[in-house]
Length: 279
Image 1 (spheres, rainbow, N blue to C red):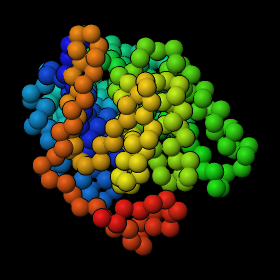
Image 2 (cartoon, rainbow, N blue to C red):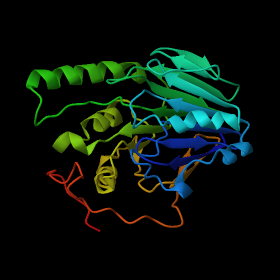
Image 3 (cartoon, rainbow, N blue to C red):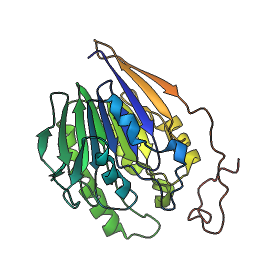
Image 4 (cartoon, rainbow, N blue to C red):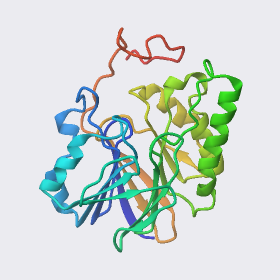
């Protein structure tokens, strides 16, 4: 394969993946109250170094879609790839589950189903296979849902994952690990690791609970899958793919790390039975 990939985390489910020539941006969001610091946001001036820029929006939930992304095309020829529930203009393509679109000689994208709105994306970038789950997850609320509701949610999740079992190996995967689900918050990600077996899984959608996904990353890996938690906005991973397919992962943390925010009365997890980071 002989390629280098830079993975950058921004906030929540927002990531970018870049080679020398191509930039992919997934589900970028600056936060409900624009809490992503200015120096950690995407600057469209950075697009000039790339020949191709693609912005992927899995669905219309506000924590996966920031309207600012539609401003970027004013300064650079950005192409938007969106789920079927999203509006798209002359510079975009809308996808349904099962659709495959060759975007260039470097990039092909295939859409898969989700257990929530929209789609998930499998992007092949110069031979590197990247999966962004969007809101595909085993969404269950074990402390509140009935047994029948949990069984239905599990069956739907397995149905949505089944087509991915027929795909070639996924190199890099972004998958929800949401602590709001209670004690079994990681059930969906664990199933995905056991069945789809991505080479690298990066948890997302963790609502600021960095200690939760750090703990998940320490214990969730397998012989087939490495799990790495990216928790600081603008944190980077450099991934080197050798010609024989061997993958080397090198973390590149940001120059400074923001202090953890203590929970307060507005924190939805302040009443949680899960551990809280009081650093």
